[in-house]
Structure formats: structure tokens, C-alpha cells
Length: 443
Image 1 (spheres, one colour):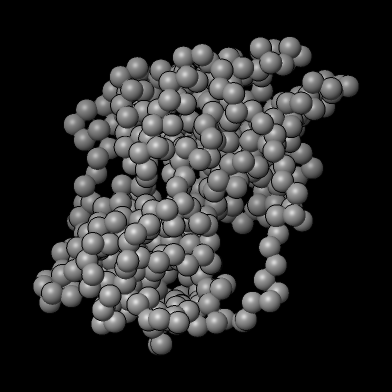
Image 2 (cartoon, rainbow, N blue to C red):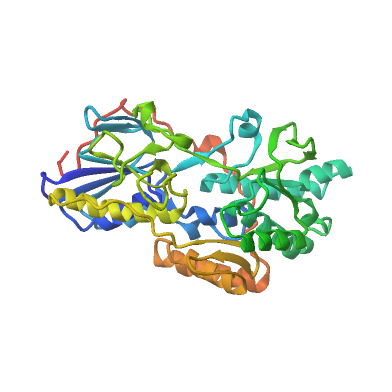
């Protein structure tokens, strides 16, 4: 392996980061190191199915090191970004310092609580597999406690579930929980025959699925209401304290479970000047996703804010397809850089948007047509299997879906609570900020 190869450090193993690596891994002119705090890639659009015990986390996740097997120019560095240092072309992580020739920032987003500290402390987000499993445990434990409740007030508080956010995640979560109540709770919890009537979906906007077509919005509202979900529009959540969700119109809902699907904000990138950050803390980039004013640092996907695309002058939507397409193009442009060729500007090819509402019911807005119902549901299933990493993941998810939809009875409702003390790992013997050897150099 040549020591003259350019060192590419990719921070973040989501859609954008992985697609840069996949498209660049066969080019021996580059040595690529992926930095991520987790040791696996996962598929965020299906987290809500993990949190409702419909599929296993392993169905939507894949270990990075397995992905990198027998790839001589790929390495994985498990750690969190502490700071980037453009002046020395290095980044500091929780486990060392990495030098780079090209740095790719693909950290994505985190949950936005809009400054509501009580909500941040007590609500249940759903951005990571850890959070999805915590949510699953919480919902199952609440149902167990509800079967033993001594008063109607306690029972209602344990069964009530408030979902904040009427976008695709909130709608899909509400539909899945309604199906869970209709097809599972009535059979497994004889004491709970009214689970669906305890679901609340709240959004500050006038419609569900705000970015989608009126046809999709109307279908989502109609299906969820028929499933018994209380849909509350034009109303924001203002506070959540002592088991009480307070809405902007003064309504108070007693609940042990506020699911927060109401917004995201770009993750912080310590070391970048504040003047390089735009709306939603997104990093300002040029037409080739280069951080403005820094020639060898690039930002991709949900993290970046790009206004050079004529079709999207106010920035791109923070969706998976943008991240995938930007990642693939950046890989090509890095090759062009090494070949002294002209770089290609990014232009987003919008392939449409979809949302599943309940079993056999979904909505799809494609570039030339909008449709709903069973056909949209089948397309949704197909589209969400294709991007999964690994054939086994695709096969296991297809089989899991087939069995669960056929029987109306997924069998994953396990309450697993690991011992936090046992799960902690000690880093007390680690040296502070060791310099990590560049890929290709022998230690």
C-alpha cells in the first residue's frame, strides 16, 4: 500500500458517509478512515419499528468492521468527534488524534427540543437504536404497570401516549402503535381493551405530513382517525413536567410517554467558526459540498446547508436521498481532484417521498404521480429493503415483515434492561489523546 495515498477521514457512518466510502473504496489512491461513536451502521427510517417491537435492531444495523473486511485501504476508528483543527489538518476524537488530507463531515442531526428543557429531560426521542430500545422498554413497562393500576387516573396516565410531530416519523409511529393496540394488546393484555383510544398525535402545523401532497395529508388524517388516534393540529407542545404534557391551547394530557418526533438540529462540529453555520446549525457549503473557505473539508447530508442548487435555493430537505447522492458525488469529485479534473456541482434528483400509515395503507408522492393504499404500501416495503446493508439484513427483514403482517403477531416484545454499571467500560488506563498512526504506516 502506497504511503503517498491521500488520507480521507470520514466522520459519521450514516447514509452520506457510507456512500462516500463505498464509491471510493476501490481507489488505492486513498486511505480511508471512518470515525463513528457506534461500531455499526443503521437505517434510521425504520427505527420506529424497532421501538414498537415489530422488528429487531439487527435487522436494520450492520457492523462497520464486517463491512470493511478484506479492504486494505479502509479502517474504522470508534470514537466521538471532540474538535477539528483545520490549521494542522487533524481531528481530535475521544480516543486519539487523526491526521487527514481530506476531511468529510457527515455527522447528521440530533433531536431538537426548541429550548424546552423539561421536554429534553423527560421526553422519549427516537434518533438512535439505543433510544428506540429505551422507548420500546418504556412502552412495554407502562402497559405492564397499567394492568395493575388501582385507579382510572393511574391507568390512563400509563396508557396515554403523546406523539409530538406530525411528519412521516410521527405518522408512522402513531399508525404502528394503533395496529399494536388493535392486533396485539387485545390478545395479550386482557385488562387493556382500549389501547388505541389512548394515542394522541400533536402537531403545530395545520396538516399531517406537511411537505407531502394534499392527497397524502388527507389520507393520513383519515386512516389514523379511523384507527382511533386523537389527531390534534395547529397546536404545539409547550411543556412536559411531572407526567403532564401541556399544549399551547391549554390542554393537559397526563402521560408517562411523550414521544418526541418534532424536529432535528445539525450536530455540533467543534472547531468550525460560528460564521460557517447557517439555519439549524447546518454547515455552509459551496456547490461541491466544500465547507466555505476551507478547501479540504467537506460536509454532507443533514449536516450541510447548500444554496447553490437552483431547484433548492433555500437548502435541501434533510432526507436520506440527499445524503446518499451527495456522498456518491463527493467520492467522484475526490477522484477528480486527484486527477486534476473539474469538479461537478451537486444537483439533487428528487425521487419523491413516502410514508406508511398502517397495515396495507401508505401514501407515495413520486415525481409524476401520487397514490395511496395497498399499492403504495407494497412500494414502501420494497423501497425500504433496497438500501439496507448486507444481504442477510434484507432477507431477515423481509421474512420478519412477512410473518408479522401475516399473523398480526410479532414476537419481539421483550423487556431487556441491561445493568448500566456492568455495561460501562473503563478508559482509566488509556493515554490522553494519543496520536493515531496514519493508515499505511507500520506501528
